[in-house]
Structures are given as structure tokens and as C-alpha cells.
Length: 105
Image (cartoon, rainbow, N blue to C red; front, side):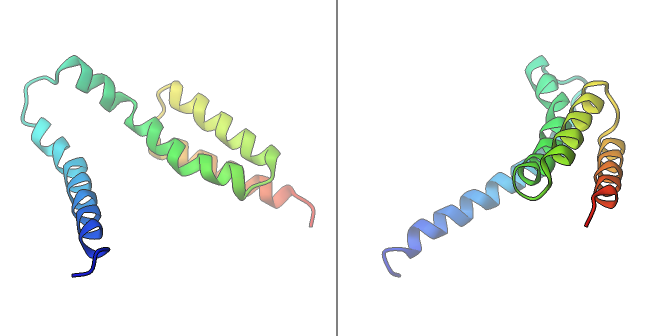
């Protein structure tokens, strides 16, 4: 092995275990009667965090500023109002698509 191989093995193992735990923890917690309060609060914000991870990078790089700001603001408001993540994503995709259709050029 070269000097660079061992650190990359650790990186791959860390990514593997991080991904595995992220997918396995909900199944382990589903067997519990009730979740501890910190865990419940954390799980409440996961959909908003996932939506932010999907929308925020494109709003900075790939979209016209007016469309990006409108879509991000609408997604933020709809998420805070408790609308399901799937509906929020579909509504914001529709709004962005409509905005791009209305742009000249």
C-alpha cells in the first residue's frame, strides 16, 4: 500500500458507517415506545434540513435571483407551516418551472 491508500480507506469506512447509521437508526428507534425529547426535536427538523440541502446550492449557483429567492422563501414558509416534505418539494418545483417558463429568452 502507498502512503495515500490508508487515509482513503479510513475515509471510505467513515462514509460507509455514517451512511449506514443514518439509515439504520430510524429502524432501531421505531421499536421504542417513545423517543427521548432531544431525539424527537432533532427528528422534527430533518425534513427542513433535507429540503434546504436540496434547494440552497441551486439558489446560489444555477437560478436567476428572483426565482431562487421566491422558491427558497416559499419552501421555508411551507415547511414551517407543517406541510409534508413531498408537497413542499412538488410545489416549489412547480413554482420554479413556472418561473422559468415566464422568463424571456
